[in-house]
Each structure stands twice: as C-alpha cells, then as structure tokens.
Image (cartoon, rainbow, N blue to C red; front, side, top):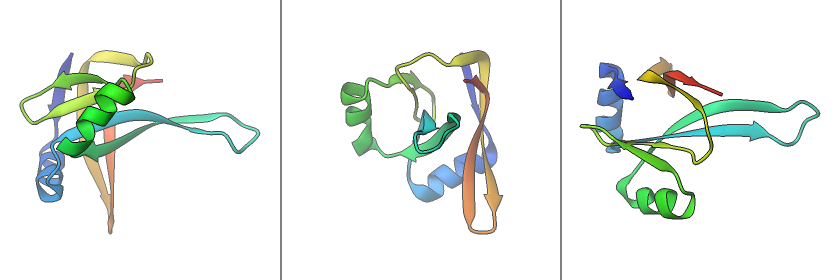
Length: 100
C-alpha cells in the first residue's frame, strides 16, 4: 500500500504539530437509518500507544508519521491519497483509496 500526502495536508500537520493520521468509521446509533462514514483526524505521539494497544489500530509507517487503520476490514486500495479541504475556519481531512 502506497500512502501519498498532499502539500496542503503536510503544511496543516506541521502547523498543528501532529504527525499521525487516524482513519476510523463514524456511525450513527440515534436514528432509524444506519449511517456510516469514514472519519479522519490527526493524532499526537501521546495517543499512539492507546490507539495501538487498547483500540488495536493497525499502523502503516510513512516518512511523515504513522497512518492508523481500524482493526476491522476496510476496502483499501493499492494507493491512498490524503488531503485537506479548507472552508473559511474549518479543515476537513479527506482520503481517496479507502471505501467502506
């Protein structure tokens, strides 16, 4: 699996002083419809032991940091591209190459 970071995401990670990306699935339990979506966030070095040991996240090491994948199966392609989208004050980390 090849992991590629956009220049905008690298600048955002440097600004936030975080080197690791956590990929998880967010679900809705409070409605009649089952909703699931891929959720990405940045993690610090302090969070890594908890995510790896307690939550059993799988780790893919890159030159920038680690990308943590959940313990359950996702459809992961041969190439993953991570990017960040900006809306005025909000930042949204996006991923291409992973599906539910």
